Image (tube, rainbow, N blue to C red):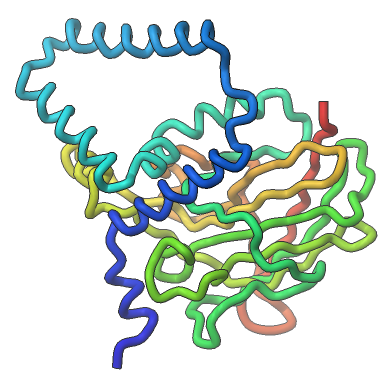
Length: 289
């Protein structure tokens, strides 16, 4: 009998990539273009990037064979729908560093290509949507959302999404329920939350497409350490996008997406009230400028 897990493990990078590209284009077409840079800024940045590429070609004596291999690979990235994956894995961490350098509150990190807005809203202590037979160890994640001055932020919104135990995200791999392991919690009057979910596993980014081709050619690995994705927001405060990690993961030190920061490391403990783990973590939000 074929199960949802069977179709899930047969997911193709091109399918996930096409979904990521379509979702990103949809977001950009519905208001995501706010703050687009002006002509002078485009001229400056584009000219600088093109010059750096040309300088590399001349300084490193790039051959026509290498140039044509690059050209074919760039075409394949687009054909596989993997531009969101490529950019979010290898470039977004630097963009996030620039965007967050002013923050006094909690550290953030990259969003990645698999965020979906509008996940089911849950009470402050609700359980994330999952299959009845969802594999993984239970995790109770609790804490408080507050301002940099310590004020609890009542009604703060916490969006959580993470991969399942096989390393796949709902809406980007076949066989998964639409909102599997995705939810939105509303903090109580004291800014507190208690999220019931599962501890995610490390996973490899898709390797059967253009990004995997680059990884193999360069002799890199494709692993991301286990992590929880969050977007946390409250009126009058800056939204923070974060990923939280677990100690002991072998790829905390060499995450392919370069997104791990010491401040984002969790401290899970065995759950004294049952199976699985408990962890506490507070989010501190900066005021809007």
